[in-house]
Length: 414
Image (cartoon, rainbow, N blue to C red; front, side):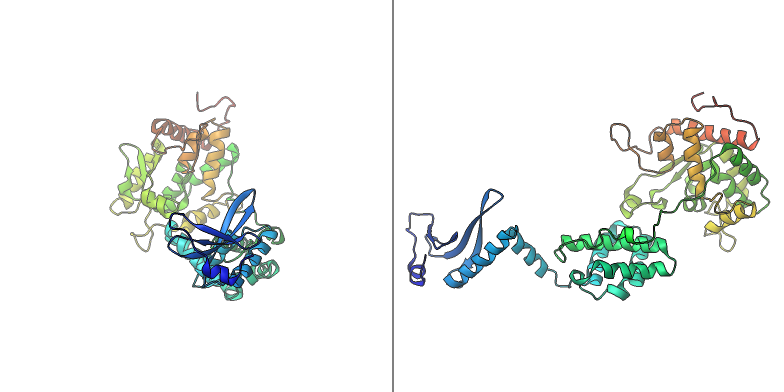
């Protein structure tokens, strides 16, 4: 074992790279030819030899080096790598803003918001401020327990907001994972909490998929007596099966009636901010029936920007409630058929009744899809095939609206 006198007198020959003076338990003093003296501890973990620096002598005395060695050996006996543990502790110190739930959640939000749409970012921040910060915002994340977080989420459930509580758990889960990554906490306390909340099975939009029943809806739409703008949107909803927000905000400048194509800019599509700014436009082929509806509407709204302008301002589109209300007026309440449900109707019937390939259907819905080789589908490709599909779909709807019985061999390939 070393003594203080030996440490003071330790030296290294000029022609040597270094000299090592062993103490005990793997601790040694390393001396360079220039005279610098540094403490190291040698240990093995996972079959690999490693070493840990304890500082320079005499700033770190022999006694202090032994204390550091013993503390490191204790960590190793607990199955932890002392060097990695020290790195984590240093990272914790590098978080000067603090480690309360509010601080960490806002930090996580600030790092993610650039990739989100403005609306999503605002809704996320609003829920954090409304449902979580008042109860656990000022609590250190390391001190928050699972039962405490569960009680917070159940406060949301108590007001009947089951979906909001489910989303609140999702926000907490992402915040805890970020906290683990940044060294604020060691474990995710949200694990297992979903089973303790009221079950939320997600939002399913009611949709008719029976051909006979859907034919009845199409006849009701055909005889709808409302205003021409809402009537046109109602007629196009099943023909084009795009999202309500995308259809009602359609602009004439994006529609080519001669070529039969509606080009929706990426900025108008559902998706993250990066996709909106850098994504490809979504192409919607227009069937002969859709073109005829738009031509009839053009004298009414074609002088303006919006295809479906609202009554109060022609610079703003009709509201989502417009078509929903029209459906209810005809007896199709939200538990029978919704505007958004036309997408599920088309997706189901195109595949099951007309045998169209999902590689054509899903991109037409603007859903991400890959082929059998794992390649992402390019929505600008196969336009001719999708034109045929959209025309075949429109012709099929005409048959349903006429009340004809669809033979089992009525297939897209025919």
